[in-house]
Image (cartoon, rainbow, N blue to C red; front, side, top):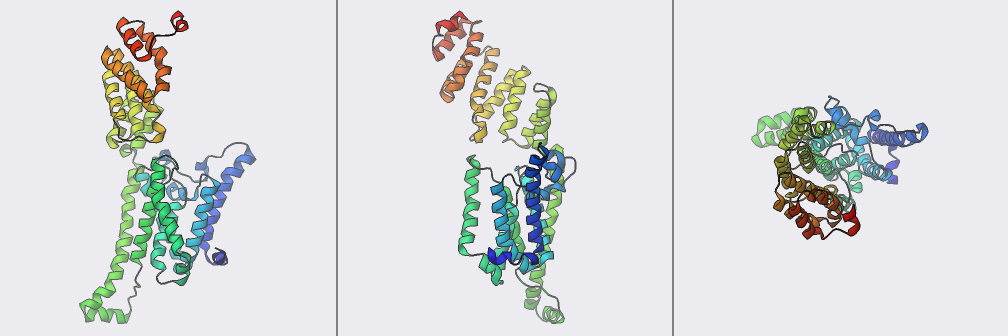
Length: 389
């Protein structure tokens, strides 16, 4: 690391990216201390879905300069210096700066497109530089010295480890940004791996034989394909900016509406059409239907929510709530036997929630001797003080 710090005056793009990330982090944290109130990240360029829907797509690349903690910032800057400084020295500042902008645009667009909204940090760009350096190390000694086997192994192990950590809810990581960044860097390395110059000698080789033509044109074709692939960013940006085709847009609109309103229900349904595996939208739709007294629809949505093979850890606590509300809908329809089956399932799945729901179920049971007897078979007889109430 010390070896590369001495090149700081020569690596303008790396220095500028580092300074910008540090300035934003200090502005948000120290600015809050100075002003006594939090500074909205959007004031310093950070993007959000609502802003993209207004056409402010220029915020997408700036998300890479924002970090949510000091350690997040520190490790990303460590890697961007360890890999980025020699990479910039090998490519030159202009080409390296263009590469960083392309990587930032590609990784943030991929994250937003593939349901990883509002991802921040330079880690996607770090993996783009890493992918490019896998090629540069073959023809540049400075890059080779930075890409030691231990460095390569650490970054590859972390790339794979982050996926189960995110799925388990232990650590929220922008995995789409990581993998798309690595893919972008590998594509750039593949495109520029072989030198390409059209001189008089190269033209003679092209005209002289098919083999010479292939040898000279192949590097050009690789570069052309790499640059043409950037056109894919256009439909990705349009998809991000076009709210009608964005499940999160409809989910956000539904949250802003009254729970039981037709508008909220319509937006939740549209969100689920666009993204069927969207448990947050499904359980909210079920509650809206329950409040709107569409009990059959609520039961159907709660069943779909409960039938999900895997739920995010933050939604597992809603299983008990879903069972309580499903039982409520079944009671409202007079389907007492089904309601009792649901209550028994609740007792097994979430005993704490079941105990909290007893008073509610007994209040309904007072209107039905059959239901009161069924509830007692699940929860037991109420205590004396509970009866006196």
